[in-house]
Image 1 (cartoon, helix red, strand yellow):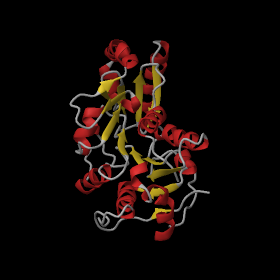
Image 2 (cartoon, one colour):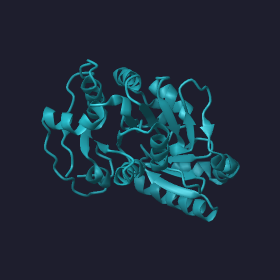
Image 3 (cartoon, helix red, strand yellow):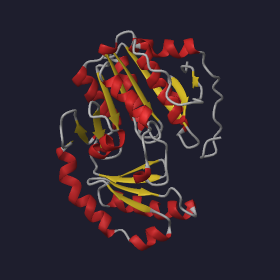
Image 4 (cartoon, rainbow, N blue to C red):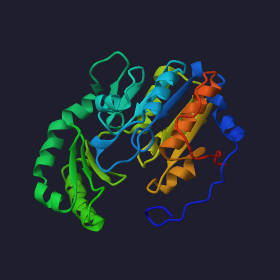
Length: 300
C-alpha cells in the first residue's frame, strides 16, 4: 500500500536482459545521450532533516564517471544548486537547483538564479516572517529558507494531522499573498508564482545539449513534470528515445510508478541503473555495494 492508502500495482522483477534493453538507447551512443536525476530519495536516502542527507560515495563516483562519457549528466533538485553540488560532490555534473530556478555549470563557482525568482525573493521572505514560528514548532513543522523558496517540513511531526492542518492555513495565506503553494513528500513549499519546474529544466537542458536519448530518475511529485517533459520531447521528435525511472519507496506518489518506463526500489536500485549505464557504455564498474534490490521492467 502507498502512504495515502492506495494499492500499489505488483511489478515483477526484470531479467538482466530486459533492463539492458531499456537502457540500450542511451548506452549504444553515450556521446548523444543525457542522464538527468533528482537527488533526495533518488541519489540520497530520505532522512528526517535535509541537512542530514548524504549521497553514498559509490553513487557520487558513478555520476562523475558518467559525466565524462555521456553528453550531459545533470542533477535537478529542489535544493539550492550550490548545496546540491556540495551534497553530490562532483564538479563535472550540471546542477539545476530550486526545481529549475537556478543553474550551476561545471567550472562555475556561483549559481545563476532566474531573474523572475530574484525579483520575488523579498516578498517570499516577508511572507516567512509573517508566519508564527511558535505555532509551527508546536505542530512539528520546520522552516527551510532556500532564498526565493520557503520549505515547511513536517517529517517526524508527532501528529501529522495537526501539522497538515497548520500548513493548510500557510498554503491558503500564501495563495492570498500572490505566492504559489506546492506540496511534496512531507513538505509544503511556498514559491514565487513563476512557471518554473523540473519539466522546464529538462526541456532547457535538452535544447542546450541536443541528446538523441535521455533518462530521468526521480521519486517525488515534482519529478512528474520531468517525466511529462521527456514524453513530450519524444512525441515532438526532439528525442529519439526516453527512459523515465521511478524510484519506488513507501512514500512515492502512485502516479510516478504508473508513468514510469522502469521502476527501481530506493537509492540502491537507482545506483544500479547508473552502474548499468556505465557498463553498457563500455566502462567496467560493477554494482556499488552489496544486496542491491531488483530493477523492474519497462511499463507497457
